[in-house]
Structure formats: structure tokens, C-alpha cells
Amino acid sequence: MNLRDKFKLKVLQSNGTQYEMFFNEVMKNACHEFQSVKPHGNIGDRGNDGWIQRTGAYFQVYAPEELFKNTEAAKKKVKSDFITLKAYWEQISPIRSFFYVVNDKFQGVSPHISLVLEEIKSENNLEKTGVFSTSNLESVLFRLPQESICSLLGVSQPQVDQLYDDRKKVREFLDSMASVFDELFNLGREAGYFFPVNVFTFISEWTDSDWQFRRLLSSNENIQDHQVNMRSQLIKMHNQVRNDNYYEYIGRSFKYKPPYDLDNRNELIKSKKDSMGKFINKFAESYVVVSDYST
Image (cartoon, rainbow, N blue to C red; front, side, top):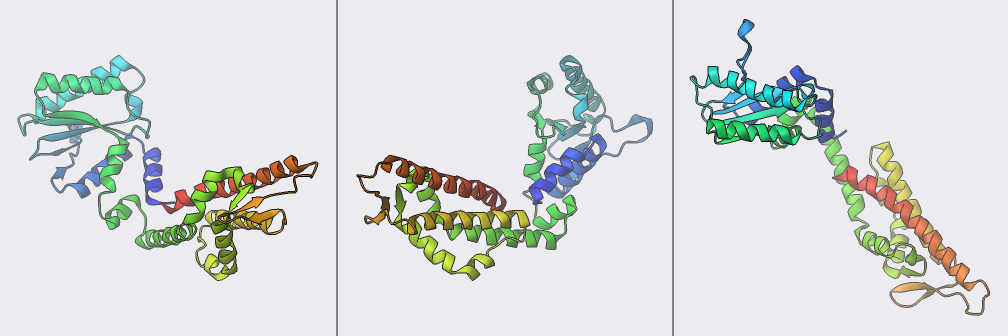
């Protein structure tokens, strides 16, 4: 699992309090001026879950279940909580911007929340208001040094280094056959009728270097299976052309040219296109998985 997947899992598993703690830790790492507010007795935090005094930026964190049950209730809550914030904190440090932090589970926040924040901005002459979503938190987190990201997500640096090295190896695997992708994906099943000579030559040379292929296999078994499948489909394409005497070299392609007087000539051509199309589709399916892993 990569770091972004780890982040998404942490977000999805966090309840209101857990998410508030995670938000505060990320912000403290990202901005040394950010201050958390610890609730005191029955007065709580007076609507302030974190702030940056110099810029007058204040943050309130909400659990998603507080937001979406009722539009009017959610709007009233946002305004009420801002009033609580302003009544206590304005005298300590003027409020210039107000951010509504919510663990939206990557689903987005209803437009009515943005609307009420604009009303708060206008009514209180603020410089800025806005929703601070999980996507915003993700952006802040992944601008941090990698060791900080690992610490916040509970991942060891060696694990990340191993993943980085493995992905680098898989990218090299894909780069080694970059010339093949455009040709095959553009042609599709038509490659069964005109098969590119450069692709045929590449497969011949590439499959002769088994050690090179093995060197670039991922340590992730699922990805490795897809790499093996990509190679297998290329070999099947190569064998279809090599083992059929009706394929004729015509310069840049091998053209499938069964005799014109064959009764089933059209059916033969169609069958070669269909089989090649299946090989390419299976190759492409694995390519998508391997490519996603490598990024």
C-alpha cells in the first residue's frame, strides 16, 4: 500500500475526534505557527480547534455526521459556532479568516456549507472563508518531507524506500517497451492484418533476454502476475505472425495475405484480427494495473 492509500485509509477510519487530532498534527508539522487548542473544563475550546495568530486564521473541525442530515440545521450550526468563536477569540486575536475543516471522506461538501461561509465572510468583513476538505489536508500533508509523512501515517521509512525502489523497477519495465504501446493500442485488432515490424523485432529480442525481464519483476505478487501476463500476450502476438506463412513482410509491417482464391479467405482474415485483438486487450488490461502501480 502506498502513502496516499495509507492516508485515505486513515481518513476513512477516523471518527470526529481522531480526525481532529490528525488534522492538528499535520498542521503543526506544516506550519510552526499553528497552535492547537486544548478544551478546558466546561468551557471547551470556545469554537477554536486550531489557529495561526499572526495571520488571524482560525479552524473549526466537524464530524461529517453533523453536517449532512439537515441543510438548515447544518447552516445554523456553522453560524452559531462562528458566533461562539468570535465572542471569545476576537478579543485575543482578530479573526481574519475562518476555515471549516471537515472529514468529508473524499465525497465533497454540500454547496450550502460554502454559501453560509460566504455569508459569514460578508457579515464579518473577513478576508477569507472556506471549506478545508480531506483533499486539502492531503495536499498539505504531501508537501511535507517524506520522513514527516511516514511518521504521521505510522509507516517506517525502510518500507517506503522498498516501495519506491520497486515502483522504480516497474517503471523501468514499462519504459523498456514504450515503443510497443502506441503501436499496439492504436492498431487494436487491425494488428492482426498489419503487424508492425518494429514490434515483432522488439518481442524477438526482448524475449531472448529472460534475465532482463526477471530483473524488472515487481516484488508485489499481483503486479508481477500482470507483468508476466503482458509478456505472455506479446509472445502470443509474435507467434501468431511467425508461425503463419500467410504473413508477408512488406516493409514496415507483416501483412496477412492468404491466397485470393481461398473460399474462406475473409473468415481467415477476420479470425486473425480477432485473435490479435484479444491478445492486445489482455495485454492492455495488465498494462493499466502495472502502470497505476508505478506512478
